[in-house]
Structure formats: C-alpha cells, structure tokens
Image (cartoon, rainbow, N blue to C red; front, side):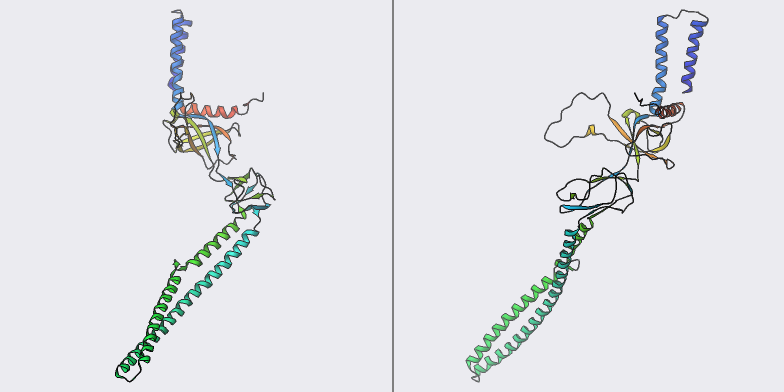
Length: 381
C-alpha cells in the first residue's frame, strides 16, 4: 500500500518537475492521456487490494432467534389471563397466558377413572386364570372318576354282575366329563391369553388408559403457556376473552430469544475469495454513530435462493440475469466484550480482515468513516 502512494507521489513529482518547473517539454493532450491512464490504473491497486484484504459490506443486520407462541389445544378455548405486556422481558418458565381449563380438567378426571377401571379389570383377569385352572382341575378329577367307574361297570356287565344300563350310564358320564375337561381347558387358555396381553409387562388396557391419561394431562398443562427461554414478547395480539386453540390457527405473539444473538453481513461472491472462519471483523451499527465493535467470522452461508427450484410439473425457464450479483451471507459472532444492546434487525456495516498491511488500514479507515458518517446520514431533508 505504501508503494502505491510512493509511486503516485514520484510520478506526480516527475510530471511537475519535467513539465512545469523545468519546462523541458510541453504537456500535450497525449501526455495528459498517458498520465491519466497511469494514475487511474494505479488507483485501482488499492481498490482491488481492499476488496480481497479487507472486504467491506454495507448490508449488516442483527439476527435473533424467534419463537412463535402458538396454543397447543384440541378445543376452542377461552383466554382467561394475559400476564405479559408487549416488549416485556420474561424469564424461562414464567407463565405468560392462561386458558380456561375446565374441559381439560374433566378429561383428566375421566382418563383417571378409566385407568382405575382398567387396573381393576387387569386384576380380574388374574383371578379369572386362577378360577379357570381350578375348574379344569375339578373337571379332570371328575374325568378320572368317571373313567374308573366306566371301566368297572363295563367289566361287571360283561360278567353279568351289573346291568347294561349302569354300564351305559357311566359311559355317558365319561363322555360328559371328557367334554367338560376340553371346555375347561379352552376357558383356561382364553383367560391366560387375556392376561398375557401386555406391553412391557403392563396390561394393554391399562397401558392404553395410562396413555390417555398422560395425553389429557399434557393438554391440561397447555392451558398455561410459559416462556420457553429468557426473552421478550412482541406483536402481542391476544386479550382475555379471545378464543384460541383448534379453530384458531396461528401464533398469538412473537417471542424473541435473548441468547445466541449474531450478525449477518451479505457479500458479493468475489469478496469472499479469502474469507475464512475465525478471521477478525470490525463492524459499526447505525444505532451507535462513531463506535466500532469487534467480532469473528463464524461461518459462511454458501447458499442462495437463486439456486433453488421448487418441485412442480413445469419446465424451468431462464432469462437474462439481474445485473445485481448473487450475494452470500457471512455469520459474525460479536466478541464477548461487546456489551451494547443490539436489537434484532439493527443495521450497519462490517469489514472482514483477511490479511494485514496497508490495505487493511484502508479498511479500518472505511469502516470508521461509515460509523462517523451516521452522525449526519441520513440527512433530515
């Protein structure tokens, strides 16, 4: 950079000495054209050097995360309390809105009753297995007795010591008890299957009732909307008496998060040739004329909507490009010692230093000129 000034000074001194002081030659239009051509190209050196050594951006903005406050309710529900005001600071967990909880409390009570009934039914299923087992045991005992009596009377009837009617009676009794055993066995298996219907060791009916109760409690909790993080409320559009929930789609307020604030500066593509994460940045905010703040390049967003095509059945058409070049955003993280208030959407300018030397000094001059110019610009007329 110093060489540019030295060469310029030497050349101007040569022109003055050769043509004005000593008057060895007359300063013709040709010499004027050559001198102008030389000086213009010489002045391009700091411009090109500044572009790559200290790329500036006049499109800097403060970015904060926002959360849309949307009620998660299954029914149209009356707003009973609004506990915050627009632009109010709130802490994580603070209650901001309350809704009428009558119907949701009733659903919790109903689900709790259904869970109690399901748990009782699960205990009945255990008892049913025991009863079915006892019934099967009795049927098997009756079958054994009927089998023994049938064998005895069949033998006596063959010997003429018992009547044929008695033998036939016990044969019928044997058939009856055999059927009773089969029925008792089927009832036991059915009771065992009902009891074995479980998920992770819990009866399926009980598990379903527990899930219904958990869902009912969840929606009951949603009748109070709490601050998700430390932040501020903006665009508050809800008042007590308004109905929100299932029939009202959309947010009722905007919540701006205090943490993780960062800056975005947009650059044309060629300015980012040597920009890398970790490089130092100086930036100025229009809100604070005359002040310079420092930060670091965190990342470059290598994406732009010009390269996105939405799915459709249409063949894309291409037209002459806009003379304004596609720009990419550089994410800048302010240094820890930057303590000033930087509201979301605040604008300014930034300079990234990819190297040192005189060109970087030009960048420092430029960003400070921008900052001090904010005392005057925009003009009030």
